[in-house]
Image (tube, rainbow, N blue to C red; front, top):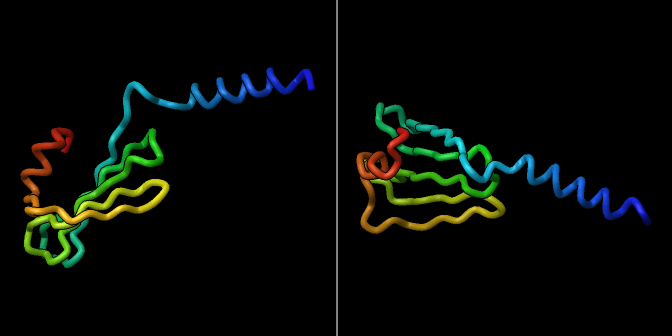
Length: 96
C-alpha cells in the first residue's frame, strides 16, 4: 500500500516526460493513386501526437481535394465545399 502513491507519481512523470507539448514534428506524405503524376492524397502526421493525423483526398482525380479525413481514436471524414486546390493546402502548411 505504501508503494501505490510513489508508483503512481513515477507513472505520471514518465508520461509527462514522453509528451512533447511545445513542438511537434510533421511528417508529410503525398500519394499519386492513379499514376498521372499529380498528388491525389496528402497526409499530415504529427509524430508526437496519436490523434492529430489528417489528410486531404482528391476522390475523382480532377486536381481538387473534396474530402478531409482525420484519424485518431476514430476516423472522421468531412466533405470540403468548395473543394480545395493543392496550392491552397500548401499555403496553409508552409512546411511543404
